[in-house]
Each structure stands twice: as C-alpha cells, then as structure tokens.
Figure (cartoon, rainbow, N blue to C red):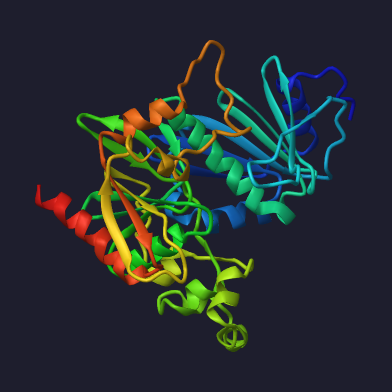
Length: 362
C-alpha cells in the first residue's frame, strides 16, 4: 500500500478500500449517534456485547467510525512521541498532525487511529486489542461533548432518583469500587473513570462514558453482587491473600453491569448534585466526610482535572478553556466533599446516599 504523502482522508479511503466493512452497529450516547463499521464480524459481535445498553436502530448517525482488522500498517509519516503522564516513564503513544486531522499509533500493539471532524478510523490487530477500539469509540463521544462546552473530569458517577454524584480520587483511592458499592445499595451507574460536566442553569449536568468498570479481586470478594466476576477456581486463591496483597494486585476484571445488577442500570447522564473526592489512606482511623470550598482547597483539584490527551483535536479556530480557573468556576456551581481519614466504603456509601437524599429533598 503506497501511503507516501497521503493526508488523513486519503489514508482513510485507501484502508477502507483494502479492508472493506461487512458488519455495522449504531451506538447512541446521549445526543450523539456513532455508526461503527468493520471488516470483522467477530469484532462487531464483541462490540455489540460490550455496548449492549447503547445499541440503536436509528440509522441516522452524527459520526462514522470504521475499525479494520489488519496487520499493523507501515506508514511513512514521522511520528512524535507523547510524553508519559506524571508519575509514568514508559512512552506508549506517538502521533502526527496532518492538515486534515491526526494519526495516533500505539507503540506496543501497532494499532493506528485516524480522526478529524466526524470521520474516524482504527486499523491494526483490532481483535487482539478490542479494548483500544472501545476506548477510541468512547473518545469520539468525549470529543463530541467537549465541543459542546463540557469540561472533562477524572471521576466515576452514579445516579439515584434522577440525581447524580461524581466520585473522584487520587490514584488508587477506589472511586470505581465506591461506585459499585453504591450500585449494590440502589444507585444506577453513570461512568467508571470519565465524566463531562456542563453548566445547567444554576447547577451542573454530567455525562458519563460507556466504559465498563474494571475491578481488582479484592473489590469482587468484598461485594456479593460482584463475586461471580471471579471464576470459582480462582476465588480461594485470592481469599488466601492478605488485605494488603489484594489491594496491590494489578489483575483486573471487566464488570458487565447487567450480569451483576440487572438490566437497565447504566444511565450515562444526570444532573450533578455534588462531587465527592476520595483522599483517604489505608491504616488510618476514622473516615471523615466534610464539605469543602474548592477555591480554598485547590490541592484537591488535581484529583478531578483531566487532560484531554491525544484523542481530542480542536477544530480550526476552536478555543476551549481547560485551565484550572475554568474547573474552579464550573465546580463552584455544585457541592464538593472530601473523604479523608481511613478507608471505609460503607461509611463513604452512607455519606454519598445522604448527599443524594438531601438533593432530592430540595
């Protein structure tokens, strides 16, 4: 395949012609419909299973995304390395900006993603890296919402009786675990790791991402609703580990919410009544939950702020403010709580349900 001097659109056309699509699904995320086409029936099946809560019969789409099972493409473009995030050392991605879009390549897998405007493409060993295709689809929805004026937050989210709560935390604090504990106590799920927030009159509205939570064995063992995530033959091995060993395990399981909690528990959007920031430590004594003024506690802001990363590309002339001041101005429109002291998910659940109950009383 001669790809010399190709811009994004030319490259996309060439790949689509070489690996034509044979299967399609339509995904509806709030007001955004993404048409996904692929040359792999198996990939299409896997994506339908993963996004089962968001399948649509409406053939009108806002974006087209094609995913092509193929060898990693050899491209003549000169890619630049993306610097690792703070605290990381390994370079995982590289990119090149073209006149009509951007290409991103994953160093480890060779997967290439091309995007610009409302047309996107993924090519490479998609079946072996379905999670990267899923993330790419979700990133298209994130970009859609950012262009509508949302800010991106690093948080999980739940909703109860139409009232939403965002759950943030510094690395390893357990925001996804807290969200799943809250689901066991009656809330529905909005998001696992990303929320987009916009102004909604005097308050805020938040949108989630259709990404299933990933949990470690300790989370599953301590929640009866999640125990089936672990194969029976593995449970005893994990039960013999100490709490510290379970806490530090890197092993992760996808939680299919409908299997664990029943159908219709993925909401994706809700008015945002508050932000809870986990800032606790194992081994401490009492868990303390207190409301804070985020302008007086700017040290908590990094737990929620999230870089848009390589997969958001502003359109020509587009200016989007992702500054600290923009986040402060936005969060002043909702209540912010810090959870400090010791790690106690039951106590944190009580506090979160109390916040949602207060909101429903007003």
